[in-house]
Image (cartoon, rainbow, N blue to C red; front, side, top):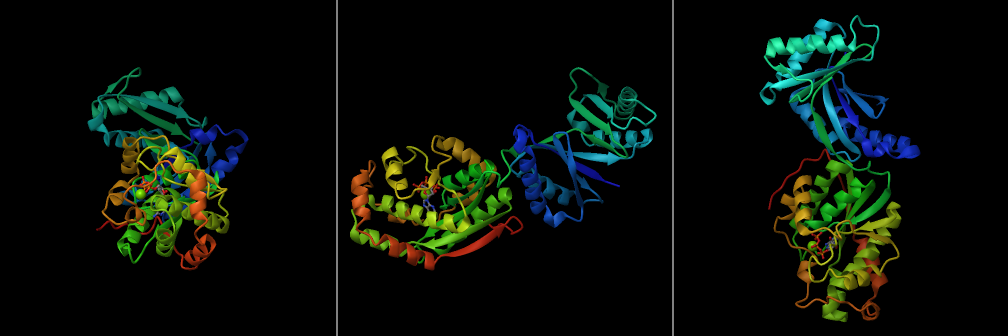
Length: 402
Ligand code: ATP
Ligand code: MG
């Protein structure tokens, strides 16, 4: 007999017409992967109307249930869900369970309503009688007032074929679309605040991400890589598993410093980063690159510079943050848990390479001329030869240190 059941809603997916089946299938696949460690407790059952059931088939410790709730809450595609208590279909069993359920919330309400429904028509009571019986039991035993028009607390009770579900609280999910339903992309992940947020937004629109981080070890510290691993690990809360490429760019930076106009350093480095991203995309069958660029956030993030950078690739470059202000980006970073990691003071391949007066309005023709001074292909080949990758997973533990 089921102990509890998680009932999941997916409104946005529901709007997708004939694609709906594909979206739900992907969502369930993602959820099953994320909840794999808990499979002994869980049984997935088919959608009932606009929802899906995950039954908890045996006694579950509260902390384990909390972990499961956290995973479900952070799965893109889920708008909201409830954790329902379950019991048998006899009236006295339902009363006991309903009172017990309401009792857990007694501090939070004075008035209540019971919304009772019997889906199983063979039980010896109808929906009205069900509501009335439960209403008077909660009134008598918990001393709360019935209010059918403006209750503080609504208790939903549904009698199904061989069990009853009882729930009250809707837990908000992060919504969006299931990871993987929009295809694959490479996200350019620095250790900063912006690119993790951009990555989250891309995943939440259904993109499956592979991350690329460019580092200048030994000029930058090994901790800077550790930090990006921690950020990637945090992002696996949403995607379950993320492959992170670590690409050394010190040689590239040295070549740029030696052969080109100082003011263009960053733009030239970014161009090569995008080109490397493009190679990784071919490897991963990804169709776009994601960056954390935000228009005007720093003096160098201008339309001219963005154009001069993305000119290096034919790939679609997605910038989820382009029109968002910093305050919103920071709030989002806090909400998704990347902020505290991002603000750890570690060095970065780009900031140590920033010239005193970087170009703010790059001229495309000049940028191309400067780029032509570099043995770009050789530099890329060498960087890729020395590229490593790690696969991070939401079962890895997170440590934040500095
Ligand atoms: P972030 O907070 O993501 O570092 P930022 O506001 O500091 O962004 P820039 O440093 O100008 O902006 O970088 C713009 C974008 O270029 C980043 O958001 C990221 O997508 C990409 N990028 C920059 N540095 C790196 C790096 N070392 N590795 C991977 N991507 C990078
Ligand atoms: Mg940065």
